[in-house]
Length: 290
Image (cartoon, rainbow, N blue to C red; front, side):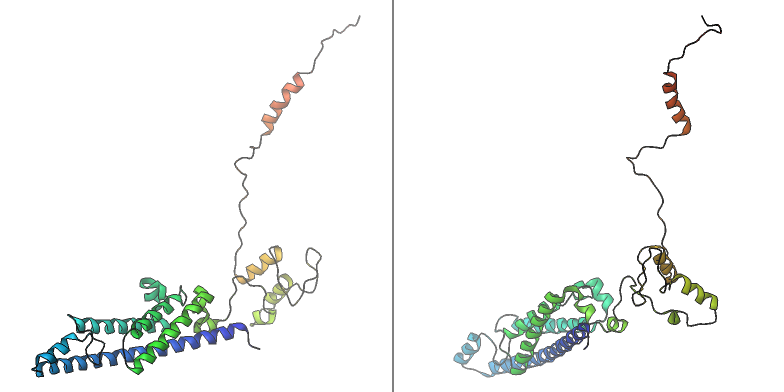
């Protein structure tokens, strides 16, 4: 049975592929809507100019939207409709680049919510906003399906962002998958045969077997070391194993705390003892006794 890390990797990348597909569909549908709106506006202007009756002109003025388009019949309606679609296209391109992870340095510096240090929650929010913006208008079937698909994927990304938080993009990264799980500190060491591939130096092998790989005999505390678990702890054997790995452990300097008393010298100690000796009574007697 494969580890849970494998299922998470393939599941997140499946959602990633669906997200890119939905963004591409919205990108294509936005271009289609722009073309349809421009054609509808041209047809509206030509029909308005050819109609000579007053009732027909009033009918064109009273309609809220231009027929067969998403353009509102107001001042600057065509301009804002086209700007809306261009902004949606720009947002879709930005989200596609974020899903592809290129350029990651640009997103980490200028748009960090879509960078590698953040999860999928912000991406899902942007996708949901784009989908809701398109669904709020009367569009054709293709644009409707693409926007609804994007909205569903956005909700799924928001849910995955809540579950995995900032580690979601790291878990689905192909480079991190190829590198494999990496621990901060080594918990075990490979066999001596794999470390000493160049078997020319027999002295190096004997030193390694005598210092690091003392698995047959007891250690300095009398415990038998297990061959399957080669953990060395923080003692002398751990320091030797760290030295073989290239890590240096420095011994801290011996210092006294600020509240500790200063050591007294022998001279001051003799002075402190002299009054005690002088306090003893001494009697001077003559050479002849009575």
